[in-house]
Image (cartoon, rainbow, N blue to C red; front, side, top):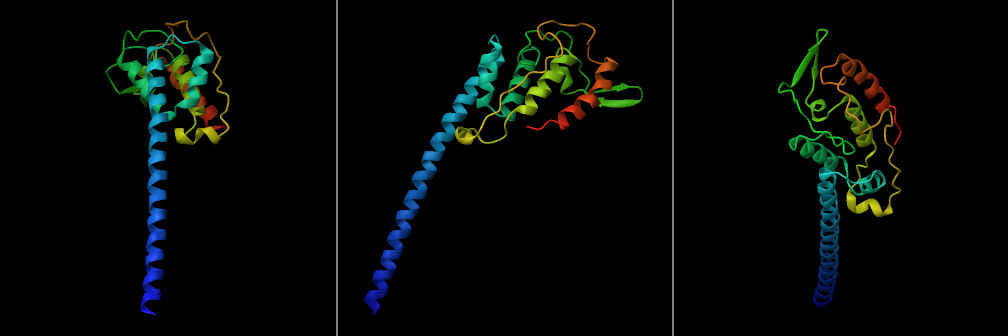
Length: 186
């Protein structure tokens, strides 16, 4: 009877060992897959920071990044003194140093807005960012990826000097944009 229990225990240990090895192998495969997709995303980030790509190519590449990557692109373009919107080639000439702007006795945080050359670019970037997927990159093969759309309210490559930071129309329209973006169904 003692031998029978020992045999059962040994079989149980062997089965656990086999299961553990399978889990380790699956984990290693998943790590390799994660690294592969992260490398692809980082290469896309570099390409989008540099700019100069056609619209359809950019929209296709957005399938392989997530919101964090897009935020990195905006931040890196800002550091290079380029407009944060990936479809704009304007350089940022006068960047406010303050974090807040007071207009009509209201305080506005302009930290994000000052990364863009105009209200149009800021709004267009927020609209595009709102469409990006939040799922992990390595799970996207099984997902249905939507077609990304651009906010086409004005030509994107034309700089309008009347849309300067601090223009009250920006702050008046910001609330409308937020309401419109919150109503989007993605």
